Length: 451
Ligand code: ADP
Image (cartoon, rainbow, N blue to C red; front, side, top):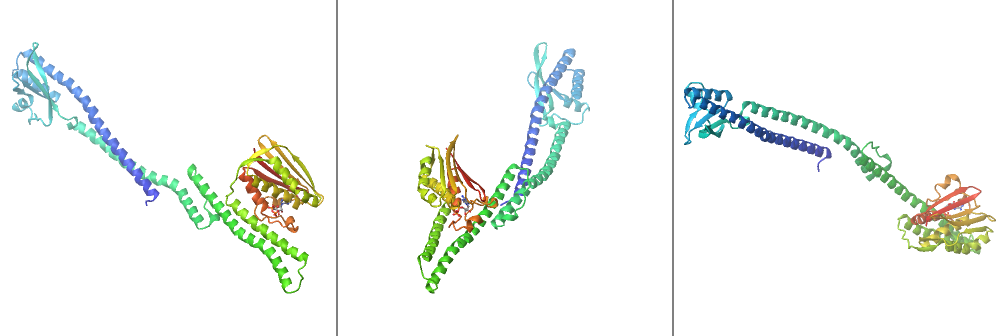
C-alpha cells in the first residue's frame, strides 16, 4: 500500500517527465525535418546560382583555363561550397578544393564524402551538355557550427524547463495533496472514532470540495444514526425491564399475600392479577409487533381497500365502548373512498387511534371522526374532547413506551407502544400522521394518505 501523497507525487513527476521528453523529442524532430527541408530547397536554389556562374564563366572564356578556374575557385570559396567539374566521360577534371590546396589558398582537402553532400547538375554550353557540375555542401544542416549551437541552446532550454517543471510538479503535488488529504485524514479519523463508538466527538471537516463535503456529511450522519440506534437499544432494554417490573411486582405481591394467608383470593383481587396478566400479554404482543416495524420488515399485502367501509365497520364495533363511557361519536365519513393498502394494517391504525380517543376521553365527552378526499389526498381526522397531551410531550408521543404524565396517572393500561406502531404503519403506506393537542381540551389526530 502506498500513501496517497506519495502516489500523487509519483504521478505528477512521471507525467512531467513524460511530457517534457515528448516535447523535447518532437521539437528536435520537427526542427530537423522542417528546417532541413527548408535548407534543402534554399541550397538547391543556391546550387543553381553556382551552376549558372560556372556556365557564364565558361561561356566568357569558352574554355576552362587557369583564369576561369581561378574565378570559379574564388567563387566556391566565397559561397562556402566545393565545386567539382566532370567531363563527358564522367571523369573528374577539376575540383575547387584540390585546386585551392595546389595553389596554397586553403590548408586541407575537404572533399570528404562523409561530411559533404554533392549534388550534380548538367554542365551546359550552347544548348548542349559538356559535362557535369557537382556542388558540394556540408551534409547535415547541424554539422554547421551555428546550427549545432542552435540545437544545443534549444535543448539546454528544455533541460532548464524540465528541472523547473519537476520542482513545480513536486511542490504542487504537495500542495494539492494537502488540500485534498487534510479533509480525507479528518474523515478517516472520524470513521475510526465511529468504529470505537465515540460518535459525539467527531472532528469538524472544512473543505470546499463538493464530494469530500458530501462524504464528510454522510459520515457525520452515519455517526448520528448509529448513536441514535445505540441509545435506542440501551433505552429499549431499560424500558422493557421497567414495563415488565410493574405488573410482575403487582402479581407477585398479590400471590405472596395469598400464600402467606394475609389475603383471601377473592374476585376483586384475582381480577387485579388477571388485569396485570392481560397487560403483560398485550405488552409482549406489542413488543413483537414493534420489532417487526422497527426492523423495517413490514410486508404490505396490497389490495384495493374501501376506507369508508373499513372505518364505518370499526366505529360500529367500538360503539358499545363509546356508550359505556357515554361518549358521543360523531361521524362524517365520505362514501366510496378507496386506496391501495394492507387492510389489516390499515384497520390496526384506525383501531389504535380510536381506542386512544376512548381511553383518554372522560365520560360524557365526544369524539368525532371524519374521512374526506381532497384532490389526491385521503384525510382522516379523529378529534376528541379528552385530557389532551402537554405541549412538551407532543414531540415524543410517537417514541416507543412514551406516555404523557397525565395518562400515566390514569390507569389506562397503556404501554406507550401503540402510536409508535401506528406511525410506522402509516409511513409504510407512504402516509403522514400528526397530533395537535391541548391539555384539558382534547386532541386531534390527522392522518393523510396519497390516493
Ligand atoms: P398507550 O398504550 O399508552 O395509549 P400510545 O402509543 O397509543 O400508547 O400513546 C402514547 C401516549 O400518548 C399515551 O400514553 C398518552 O399519553 C398519549 N395519547 C395518545 N393518544 C391520546 C389522546 N387521544 N388523548 C390524550 N393523550 C393521548
